[in-house]
Amino acid sequence: MTNPASSAAPAPTLEDALAALDALPAPQGLPSWTPASEVPLDQVSSESLRSCGLEYRTVDARDEVAFEHYLQAVNRGFLEERAEHLVGSRSTLLQLDGRLVGVYDPDAPRSEAPVATIATWGTGLVLDPGCIAPMWAISEVTVSSTHRRRGIARAMIEGELRSAAGTGYPIAGLTVSEATIYGRYGFGPSVGARRFTIENRRAGWVGPRPVEEGRGRIDPIEREDAMRALAALHAESVAERPGEITGWPGLWRDAAGLHPGSEEKSHRAVRYTDADGRVRGVVVFSIKDPEGTAVLRIHHLLAATADAYAALWHFSLTHDLISSVTATLRSADEPVRWMIEDQRALTSTEHDHHWVRILDVAAVLAARRYRAAGSVLFEVTDPLDLTGGRYLLTVDEAGTGSVQQLTADAPADATTVRLGVSELSALLHGGARWGTLAAAGRISADGDSTAWLDVAFAPAAPLQLSVGY
Image (cartoon, rainbow, N blue to C red; front, top):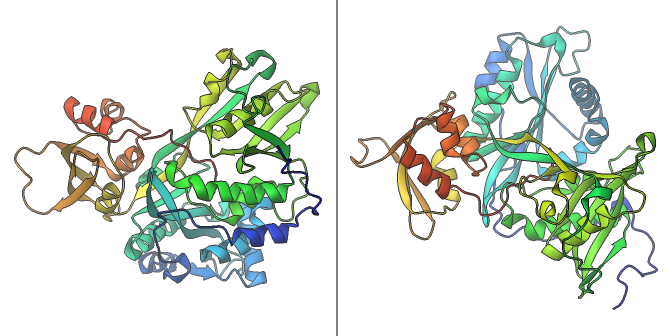
C-alpha cells in the first residue's frame, strides 16, 4: 500500500487552503435563501430604539474603522473570551453575505462605538437525513452593561426574527451562552451536546481495529490540510446528519486551530485514509499536561465511515503518555461507548447547545420526514404572532408529511395537541420526547397522541451539532 502522506510537496499555506475551500462542492439538497445582507432592518425595532434615543443600523464589514468598533463591542460583551475567533469574522461575514447590526447611543462619550451588537447570515439546518431547511443564523448578541434594561436585546432579537420571517426563512437558530434568555422569543433547545472524559488507561479497547487489519491507515497532517479535509468531509456527509448545519469556511479554519491573529500552535491533526487512499476521517486535538497528568483534548472529530470513526477514536485512546481524553459537542448516542471495555471509564455531562425558533410552522413540519403514519392537529401559540395558529399534520405511509393551516373548523376526529412555538421548536428534531414535555406540563396532549408523536418524530440518526457559532 502506498503512503498517501509521503509526498515531498511543501506544507500548504493558510491562504491556499482557504482558497481551496471555495472549490469544494456544496452539500446535496442545499436549498436557496436570500442573503442576510440584502434584508432591510426591521422598522418596528428601529422605531422602538429611536424612541429611547438610540440608533439601529447595519455595520459595513468592509469599513475597517467601523468594524473595529463593532469587534471591540463584541469582545467587551463576551468579556474578550471570543477575541481570537472574531478576528476572522469580517471575511467570514463577507463570504456568507451576512450582516452586522449595531445599536448606537449618540449621547455616549464614544458615539461611534455600538452599545449592542448582533450578527446574522443564512445557512442550512439538517432536519432529517436529506432534508435541509434554510436557517437564519444569529450570533454575537451583546448589550453593554451600561445600557441594560432598556429593551435593546428584545428589539434586536425580535427585529431579526421578523426580518427573517418576512424574507421567507422558515427557522432561525443560535448557540447560546446563557440558557434562560431565548425561550421568551420562541426559541427551544432542539439539539443538545455531551462532553466526554475517558480514562484511557482504564478504558480498554474492544472495538474494531481497521488500521491493524489493513483496511486503512492513520497519518499526521498539517492544520491547513486538516481544515480542507474537514470541509470536504462535512460537505459530503452533512445532509445525512440531523442537527448539523451546512457550514462555512470560517468554521473549519477555527476547528483546525487556525484562528487569524492567534498565537495558539498546540493544535495537531491526523487523518484516516481507506485502502483506496481516500480521506475518510480527521481528528484535530491538542495535548495539555496540567499537574503531570497529560490530557488529549479532541477539538473536532469527523468521520465519514464506521472504520474512520473507530480508527480515530482508537488512535486517541491509545496515544502514548496520555491519562485521559476529553471531547466536546458529541452526540448523546456515541458508538465509542461500546468500543471500550470498561464503560465506567467514560463520564459525560449533557447540556443544551442549539436553540432553534420556528418561523413558519407549515413549512418546517412539511420539510422533514416521519417514522409513522397518522395525523394530529397542532394549536400553536406564538408570543410574536409570526406563525401561531392551527395546523393539521398528516403523515402518509412513506413518512412524508403534509401540513394544512386551518382557518375553519377542524375535522371532527382530529386529535389536538396544544403547545407554544418554543416547545414545538424544541421537539422538532426528536431529541426531546413529546410524552416528557406533556408530563412536565409544557404541552397539552393525551397519552395516545404523545406515544404516536414520539415515534413519528424519532430521529433517524443520533442528533449532533458538532460546532458552535
